[in-house]
Image 1 (cartoon, one colour):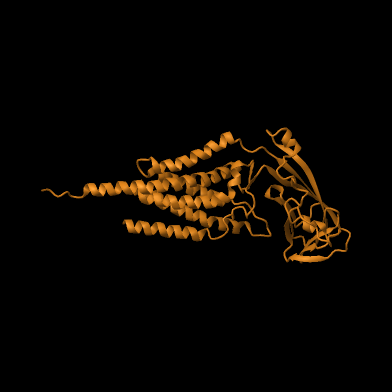
Image 2: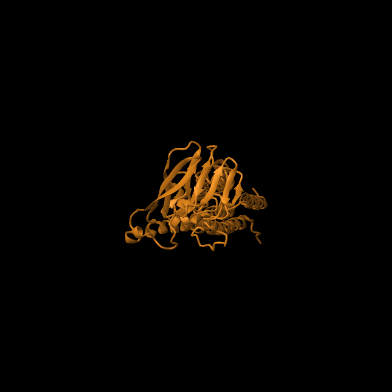
Length: 356
C-alpha cells in the first residue's frame, strides 16, 4: 500500500470512528454511574402480583416500577399521601405531593412550592403514557453525601448492611409491600490496582517508543479491540422506561465494532512491518477506547461495577479502555514517527550513489 493510500485509510477510519460515537458517549450505562461502593436490591414483593415488577437501579439510587398487571398501582409518598398512580393508562403524579419535588433531586435538596401539601386534595398530572416509572426514592439509598454510613466508618475494611428498607404500595384493593436492602463494600485497594493501571499506560507507550518492530504494538491493538467488544456485550439492562436491553447493546456495539475493525487492520499492518501505519491506527484506536471507557471511569476505584456479566472482567475491560487507550495514543504517535524515519532511512540507503 502506498503512503498516500495508507494516510487516506487512516483518515477514513478516523472519520468513521467519529461518526460511530456521534451518540451519547455514556450509552453503556445510560448516563448514570458505572461504579459505586453501595449496592441495593429488592428482596421481596409481597404478595406476588403477576405483571408487577420492581427493581432498584444505579446501585440503589433509583427505584423502577413496571406494572403490566392491568390493575392500577398506587405508590404513597413519605407522609403516606397519594404520590404516584401507575396503570394501564400510564403514570400519574400528584402535583400537591411534597414527594413529587423531593424526589426530583438525588439528595432531596429542593425548595417546596407553596401548594405542596400532603393533606391537600390530589391534583393528578399524567407524566407518561406507559405503565412504568423510575424515580429517586430516598428510602432505598444513602442520603448523606460524602459521609460514610456509621458501620462503614467504624470498620471500612469489610462489607456492611447499611439498612433494610420498605416501600408500601396498593394494587387495586390489595396492599403490597416491597422490601429490600442497601449494602456498602470497601473499594479495591489503590496500592493493588493503580500500579496495574499505570503499567497498562506504560505498556502501550513502550510498544511505540521502544519496541524494535511494530508487532508488540499490533498485539496490544488486538487486546484493546477485545476489551471494547467485551465492554459493549456486557452492557447492563437499562431502565425499561428508557430503552430495551437489545437496543442498548446495539448502541454500544457500534463504536466497539469500529474499534475491532481498526485493531484488525492495525494488527495486519504491524505483521507486515508497516510500523508507521500501525502507529497511526493505534492513535485512532486509543482515542476510540478512551471515549468508550472514560464515561465508566468510576469503575476503577469502586467496589461494585454496573455490568450484565461478571464484575472482574468488566473492571478489567474499563481499565484496558482507559489506561491502555491512553498508552496507545502516546505509543502510536511515537511509532508513526519512529518507523516512518526508519523507512525513510532505508529508502535513502537503497538509493544509488553516483561515482566520480
